[in-house]
Length: 174
Length: 418
Image 1: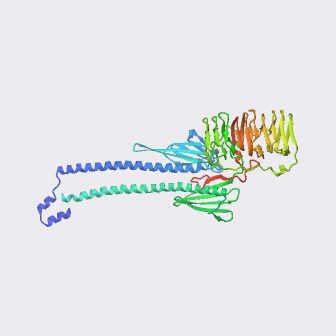
Image 2 (image 1 turned 135 degrees about the vertical axis):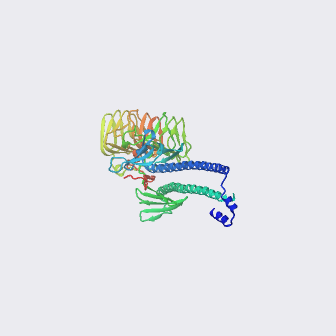
Image 3 (image 1 turned 180 degrees about the vertical axis):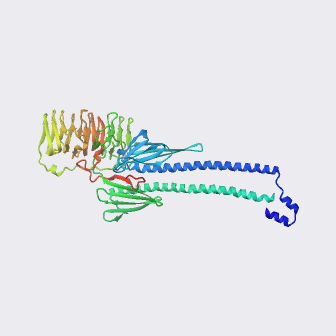
């Protein structure tokens, strides 16, 4: 702009200077603001929807990842426990079993999947949280096959997200 | 107006920059997610490859065909094989020993899962509730249940009830196993290759139904120290009471009749060396043999084995403490076990070359292995899982026994135990 003015002054064109310094009319500004507002509103709408989708999908990914990790951890341990050591209590919400001499159990506490075990020589259960956002957990045992059902849930932007996952394990030890 | 072109350019650049930032964020978020998903898939595939290695080790241990395996020292074998998207390497340690250990590592794209399986050669003849070589049809009573328990844990019932009341036959015919009268098998049933299972009258099987049973039944071998004993002639208790204390006995026949009661104190081994067509062992007319707690009765019989009414009271309540073996080779009913509903049969019968018939209101705990089994008019059958323990009975499996997994564990448990 300065260069433009400088050129105009250098050329001695006062009419050009006047023309260059001439402001917008109120009508032009209003039209411009209106158009800009409309564009910004539409862009914001698109971004808003995108952001919501982003949050939901991120949450879904996190829940799926948690579901896989929780299921994999439980599966590895339960698979190697003998059927005679397994007891399922609390209407299927808790599983107790042993791996060698170590008693292990899985259940939910405040929507957290917890694993507890008693270390060698100890008497107290040691707890570790394996996952959060657990809506439900259910175990069943039939003919050396354990079925595990978990459901993870979360609310994002007022929308409820639910990720169910089921697996069946054949117990390897007798 | 031409002088305002730059504004549109800046605006477009701003929008594009914003979208690029968002796109980059999405992309960067999806990369680790994709990586984690792929790793999970690879890990799962690696696990099953490791399982394939264990299965192959078990197969080769049983077949003895080590083609393709390399020696690793004097006692170990190793093999690496490609399968699907990865490979597995399995090492069998002490492959000719009683308990070889197979360690298998499955690997897919650098992700490994390792499994260790300790194998054992089944040394038990009694791996199912009922095992025969011909068609099995039973039972004639309504609602008979075939299930299991573990006598080492206590009496049958309560929490000591399992689902290993397996019935197996090597018969390969249609209806090789036929269940009637609402019978329920809480366990697996297996026929010979091509054989079928027929379930009539709402009978059911809770476990697997397969047609891959090809087990062989080894002949009974009379222990040399027993067969070489001088014969004590006929033992005949016609009423009254008698006692057999710990030791080995050899009779021409053993008979208890008319309310006679013979008590077994300690471990008694008895060889009834009669002619095949004669009665070797008989309990009739309210006669009874009572095995006291701490006692054990092992009977080898060359001829007929007949038990009725009060039968044999096994007060140890461990089926392994009443073992009956037949050397007879005849397609006829050799052994008849009956009762009056008051005394269950708690024992094992092994008659690989002849027939066994059970009847008359009898509850059976233990296992029966015979060429043919007539399971008639009998209450439920409870297989004792303790019989699988090697050495639980005097006669054990040899040529026909198979390696199976004794202990299975996945190495590298993700969570600590100690």
